Image 1 (spheres, one colour):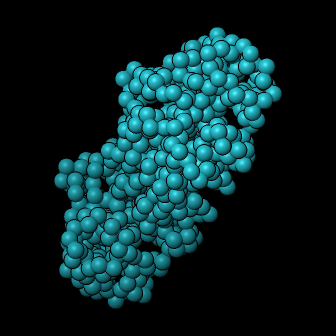
Image 2: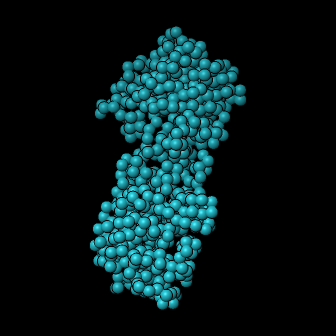
Image 3: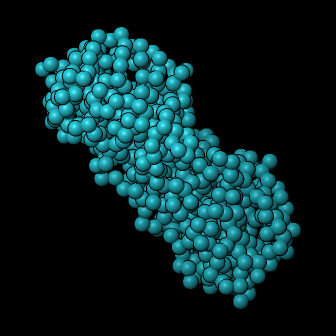
Length: 301
Length: 301
């Protein structure tokens, strides 16, 4: 069975881990790159690395970086007046250095990602949604800032007034992405932040079209009890004018999805959502076993 | 009293530390950059960093890197198939990353070095001999290799057939270097490897001329009992056709120095050296106190 998961960071990585745990699933994970940044001259791809580390079972405890990492280099940066707010672990930095060096020598992000996934023994195909430059920009009261500035430096405390995806107009899907969607038995939009993690991907015209034409696209809601498990998705959706709760999630993905999977505690939302199938189940997937269980439910096993 | 020390790595750093320990010495250290390299896209300046770390009192135990460093990043590089023979500690890498990033943004090596020295609270002026590209290339039986390839990867086991200094013909001394030499009461060529650490500096025409015209240039021999304390200087000098012992050191610096300081155990060499003054004393300066004592002797205190 062929599965494509569209993933942001933690929520997407956990959903992908669920499908990776199914023996009969051939998994492709399409990953958001709107959060990518250049930090101290190093190419940072937070969502890609979270997916890689999670599928490798070496993910850090707080949704970023690696487990049991040290932070000697990051601490020492302060001596030279460098901003080390963005915590980069020493082992995590080896991946950043490899990526930066390989890309400086002409490798594509997708090529580097394939080598990295292989080096961790990951069976799933992990694809950045595009090899082209795509950056999520966020308008707050102080003006337009990058995703990292909003999310890390400002701890996602500002109200989001608008969002734009620099480069999305001309970005092409990475090789293999459209074929993977076209051949997939099921496409899953993971429980990631719709405006900040999924829209950067669907802002690419060909990705959007491929999803719109696919007969079985399922989104898993990022909300439980009307609030996000992690991150600011609920607040961001509200401030961008989307309805509250799963009605807002359905609207965020209007025209793209055929089914919305909501938490069993939010079952009442189903009656307010038309046109698409709504499935209510336990969607909290912090633990690997729970993710595998949800993955099975999504493919009807 | 104004002192200029021309320095390679460990021997030069130790000599500089001796002068830095004198209350009345105003010290400029001119440092070899022929060993500089780009490793994984990071700018490596081994001799500069050894001088900085030694003057800061945080030098590693083996002549490179920092004391009490960790090597998590370097170990992890192997996962991605990157050559991690050149041991880069995590804290040491923070300096490499700062330098690389600052230079990518247009800073000169000398500017970065000044900031680094300041960040470690070093009172001496540390100058790379040039901001231009200068690379020591070494001919061995397998052909021409870089200094790092010869020294680190091949552990300086090959016979050195010839040496060249790429870029030296057009390299300009760093701003301040010629003035520092011109105003110095004493110029000291540290007990560094003559062909591999000092000649890359004297290969720059203006540096060579400034030394030739200075009335008080003292070289401290890198040999004790006819052999080097550390590194391959004795073998390299022999294979490049220089006479054995301190006669060879005097010949290596012919026309540049006014005095050669040799170890008291090699006192007999003095009778074979003409034209320049020879001073015999204890030149083993592994310990800071010994370096201060030698520094005092060199300025006649």
